[in-house]
Length: 198
Image (cartoon, rainbow, N blue to C red):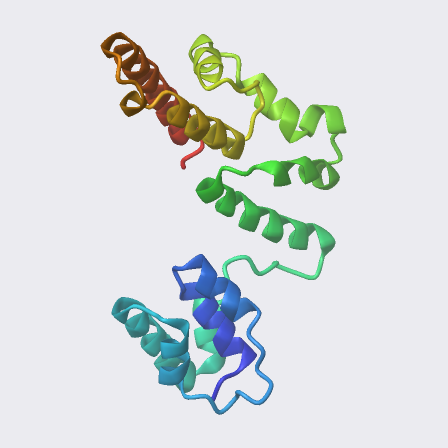
């Protein structure tokens, strides 16, 4: 039998962010009697994930509360305090940002710490940390300003790579020039991929 607690356990062990999101929004109305195998097939789980889900379901069937403590959702607030809820959601977005490169959520940290907007805005954070000569050089290569988000850097990189793709130039000299530009673009983009763990 499906319960909200069991869905939260499954959500905690799901590796695919899409599946985590589906489980987080899953409507149990009229579906409590859904078979676990049917649910796993509907979610399109891999064989490895199915093994994890079956194990979690066995543990849940034996002792629901103990299983929940083991598997409970990683970002559950420690208490009903607004500060604990903020910390839990902030950590969720911080972890997600490592995948997407979007750190815009940091602008809200000022409300948790009480620091001024000027000291703690993400824009200032990015601007103050983009001061090394190497990073400035890569920003210029990719034709983006200091403080640009990873999405902006990625978009500019793709646009410039299309513009300077060596295959577009039949003339040998122009082709060599395009190759040198493309190489610089790749080096610059790799620098920011490492910086943003993308």
